[in-house]
Image (cartoon, rainbow, N blue to C red; front, side):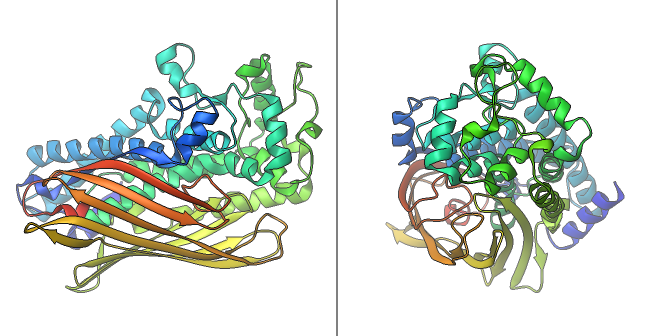
Length: 469
């Protein structure tokens, strides 16, 4: 509690929390990408057009619900503890963070559907959908009856055999994509806080999701880990009831190191029907076990950010503020260690990221740049907004690749403001072959998204300040 109190006091001292009695101090944006191509074409081919969300759609839905939680808790506590002094500002932030954290906890572990748990499973499924593999997100059991848990089921062995044979990197990436979604959710909320001044009271979520990712990657060290797989196999007597991966990270490290091993080499399921999908620690080599231990230790790097304890902006002077966050993503070739730098200088805002792409043999660099939207005046108002971003990299193809393969992604996000609240948003992007967090494709791909965005605020905030971050 002392750490939280201290961090909130520091954030208040740096101008984080306004004392004015107006709701524009807590702006909120809602995004909904309705069309996401070519993902929805792939979903149609897999028979899941209305039963599968793209990574960006799932991320938007979950982020929107968290935004709503923080916004209304901010409004509630603004009325109860008006932040018109430094002391009241600290009390206000503590109360808002405690209340918002309780809602986040209940939503994630009891509401389940559309929560971070649901999003985690949808990111798993996205990697299957783009390869024509149908699946089921068991968080939907909250609506359909049965146990609503974090599992992807109704996947056929023959589809996993085909995926391992024809696209082993995609299979490996699908195993790690769940916690990828959680770090992207935190990144999006951090962008809200830094760039839009949303003041999300999300300290509990920062800690909850980061600790979940750390614990999950390190789960294999637990004494009852293999026994839990026995219990899982006992539940999955019918193939349709089995999770497509089991616990995520022993299969991830197993297949990362064995791209050429047939999926059938896992051996028969203990029931005698089908293939044994879940990987016990006894199936790992010493090298694989040690590598997963290293990944478990590196997950703690995700705690390295002032955002984690509610410090959303660090002001250097009257013209410049910044913040940073470290992220460790497991992926199709090993991992990406990212350093995000949030910069606000002379009323222009930038997200500048350095990437370190690491496989077994090499560490390769990448750079990502994004800036605040350019606003174009139409009929006397800033209606047309354009926001470019670019990522350039050298990446390995897989875990054993010794080549440095150049590539990148360019994205142009445009918005047309219908009024002070609503905006039509279109995003065009193109990438070379390579891994990008939040993009399910490892091959070269062009894409297009179309959706709507709404900004809710009062005062003198403009759409261009909120709409496209």
